Length: 391
Ligand code: KIV
Ligand code: ZN
Image (cartoon, rainbow, N blue to C red; front, side):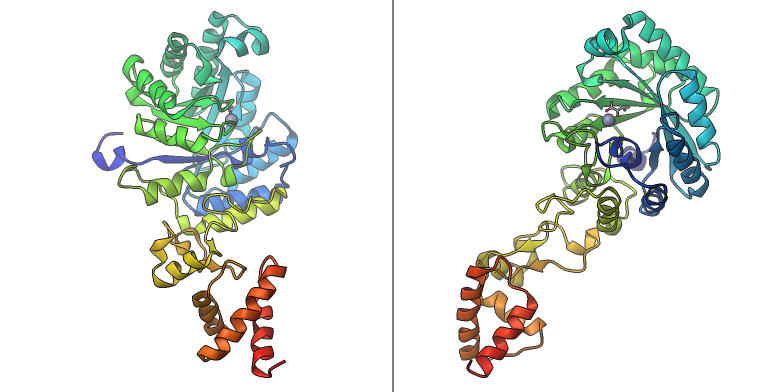
């Protein structure tokens, strides 16, 4: 990364189809995966992690097919440090115009001792061997120290240096168990930049899980410290509490570009479509109050807020619904709604009513709203009829 325009560019690495699919119950069909990958490519995702080819025949076929159909995005496949994993990933990916092997091994004391049952020196040897094996197959190799944020700092620096010397072009630091906090996330990236020879020649990436609800904050803090790739998923799908949500990191950098002066290549107007597509494919509903893509993210029911919104949308909205692919905000008619919102709704439905009729309709509307959670357009039309004929 050399000139100033490139320095603020953050690559978006989407792992919905790999880490997202690892979420219990989120298995997607082959067709769903192809459709999601095509949309991610169309919306400007830089790298699509399409799967873990050694994991199953289905994963291998999905990665191969996504690779064949790729247009602009780099297609990536995950591999452990075993040569068999790496070869299988290359076999699936080779049809893509641009492809990447992402290989990883655990580096934290806990993972090395209990999960891998390997000595630190053996892990260092495995890093050197796996990365150079991958690098003999492609120029684009990403390496990750699993449980990176709980890795002892000196060992993390040594492991990263080994991967870079062996040919890694992207170094991704996973917060595998969502344990870090923004200051620490930034500190780890700053430490690598300061201490690891060759680090300025590779892209530093951040991969944050959401166990403590800090994945997006941690990813953005890593970017502020020098990371230039964020790994994320649509709707924050992923293991346990999920990964950093693509729509949140992208919109945070767009809406608060004054304090987060970074750019992505994402066409944000496709975000809502992607969110709905992933939700339908997985059967995972999006929580109503989910940032950016939740049903209520652009909905307003309280009379005070609706009145403000009718005067100027900026009063209660920090982004425009059009920017994420919605046509308009939603003024929900319920018991908190006021007269101004009711008059506006009546106009939208084609009714110009006088002050007296509005007063009547409003009284009946409040009675109805007390009984119902949401008052629908048909209910309001019925109220107009009832007040007009005096019933
Ligand atoms: O969370 C994690 O550590 C991962 C790695 C495989 C990158 O998903
Ligand atoms: Zn992960």
